Amino acid sequence: MLDSHALARFINQKWDEDIVPRLIDYIRLPCKSPHFDPQWAENGYIDRAIDMAYAWCKAQSVPGMQIELMRLAARTPVLYFDIPGQRSDATVLMYGHLDKQPEMVGWRAGLGPWLPVMEDGHLYGRGGADDGYAVFASLAAVLGLHAQGVQHARIVGLIECCEESGSYDLPAYLEALAPRMGNVDFVIGLDSGCGNYEQLWVTTSLRGLAAGTLSVEVLSEGVHSGDASGIVPSSFRIARLLLDRLEESTSGRIKPSDFYCEIPAERVEQARAAGEILGDSVYRKFPFVGGTQPKVTDFGEAVLNRTWRPFLSVVGAEGLPAIKDAGNVLRPRTALKLSLRLPPLVKGAAAIAAMKRLLEAAPPYGASVRFEPDQGASGWSAPATAPWLRSALEHASRAHYGEPAAMMGEGGTIPFMGMLGKHFPAAQFLITGVLGPKSNAHGPNEFLHVPYAKKLTACVSEVLAAHAVR
Image 1 (cartoon, rainbow, N blue to C red):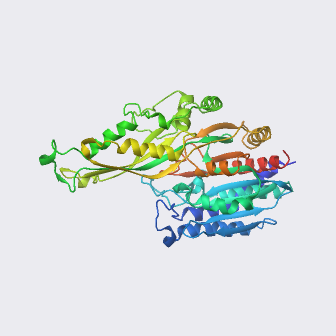
Image 2: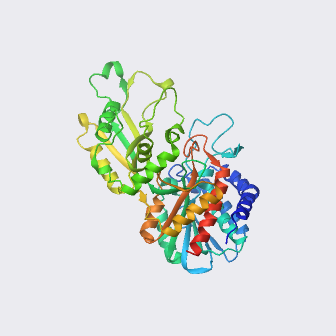
Image 3: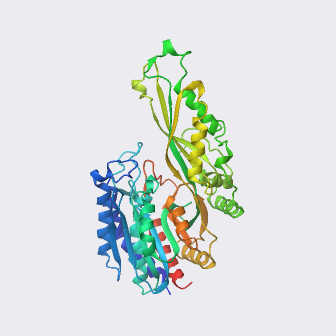
């Protein structure tokens, strides 16, 4: 039997003395994902991050653990470890990543993406919560079992460095490693979120993503707006017309049926239950300015909107000079980076193809219009939760948070989950994480809620122990 109180003491000490110092070092590294740092190999930050994680793992002296860095030609590296267990008929796969999103503007005074700051239990800086902590927490959870002599199944770990770019390097590593992994019947991923910091949150689904750049060109060079406006069509207005094909501007509703799927009744029920737990924090957690109101105030509908329905964000633009540099010129080109979140059961490749057809067909005024895809990732929906796992999650949450476990879909994308679902169709999944209210992954002021992460680590230990005796 696992002593939950002794486990919590062990995990707390491990985090305070060993994990937090390493995360501070990790946050200082601008190890941006290849999509945001095409010269990642020359710059060396990804290699430094994974070398640091490798050295830390080696220093833990886990009995029998084999650990290696894999570097396939022209691909980002992967850290792989293999820990023998007391049961040889099953294998647990633990997943995380070390690559980061770019800097982003808007960090408050005294904070920055590569500046680790601990404040009121929050460790600020890019990547700590998304999800550099995962490799450290994964091994700490195993060590928590070893400290009490509690058995576990064989455990393998896969820590990648391409997740924020859509995990395009991962299939090659999965192909190489799948035979060595063997019979994976349980997957633990620590790259997701939590609805609050009061209980264990389990991710039941993830949205997909269709992303690319819409470019509209009307002239070979800019011309005086007083001379051209009224004759030359605005590239910005044409871009607006094209976006109207995709999105209803008054409501934000995505128009074509290609980007929808039927929402399973179980997921609707889970969203309603999560909405009741979260209340208005489901939208109050966002830093609205002035009198800005959320799109929807029904709690359950808000959860469904961010987990099972498609919505568009324009996340970047080119061809628009800074306001201080903007003269009275009719610009030759407007380019918009589009990010369309997809329901979990919509295929990313099909959605990308549909976007390209929709946006490039019959260009207004015969303008030069191109949609250049850069990411088409499918979502994921978990298989039905086995009774042993449901019981273990409930016990773990009550033991370490004092509250029942909760289930909810997440709005982000982890392509790895869909890949694993194909490789190991009979596996159970525990997808969870520390990205809760105001943690702001990808944005300014990202933080890791350290007290929550400690309890989450202990919960993973509890579930590993339950898996071994299920």
